[in-house]
Image 1 (cartoon, helix red, strand yellow):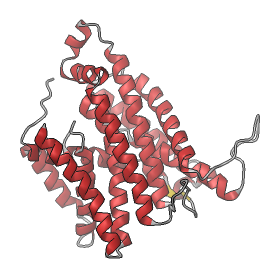
Image 2 (image 1 turned 180 degrees about the vertical axis):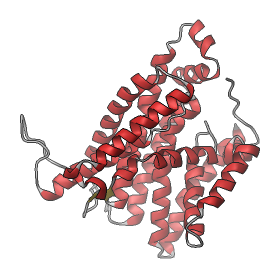
Image 3 (image 1 turned 135 degrees about the horizontal axis):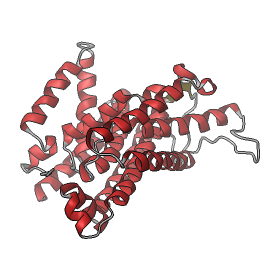
Length: 328
């Protein structure tokens, strides 16, 4: 545990130091890459709560990522067009204030996760995977057929949203917002994992029958974890859309769900900083190998294969020299 704690501190420090060095070298693109890594890591932290602690292999978390993105896009587009979002039965205006957008993204994603989780958690195994995938694809095709907000072409936001006291157009300041949000969520997830709720969730993952025997309502426990997981991923979606100032149906795609899962597997399933390490490595490989070949994901696949076969605890687990064991 002590070794892993130092590894976590090192990963967090590197994520912070790289953009600060890039600022000194006048490399704003590197800062943007670090910001993207922080946001995608946040999405991975959300899924890791369901996957790592609860053993819920969700292939539809792109639904919450996309809901968060569209929450930002819809609110910001109405704010930039000075058109109310709704006039009947009462007027609701758009907004470009990040805290308000984040709240809407979290609530909308949590509600969607509550609905999807209430249905999908009645299944298990491959059926659970397919149900979550189906819901994700339903949102994807709905976004494509939604012309009011760009349809297949997506929706552009021409001005970045605002945060009180911060110049969000400055790359390093926007990175600072994303980094602080990531660290705050990691702190909350860590506390949650160590709480009676987290211990019961992990216990139900290890042995569901034993958890039921001692009186734990496993369905309710997993549903709460699934909702929290979706809310965190939705927050990441809002930040990602703000980074790009663009939102499109691809945020709902099953490819996005797969990428988020790759971050976790690379870094380490059930490892607190596993998604952070995985997202950073993914962005680094995309940047370094993407310019060499458009088929750079072949190399990613080889690395992923190596991790799955020889380092099941992921990069963080391999460095810590211990592995989280899952029974069943």
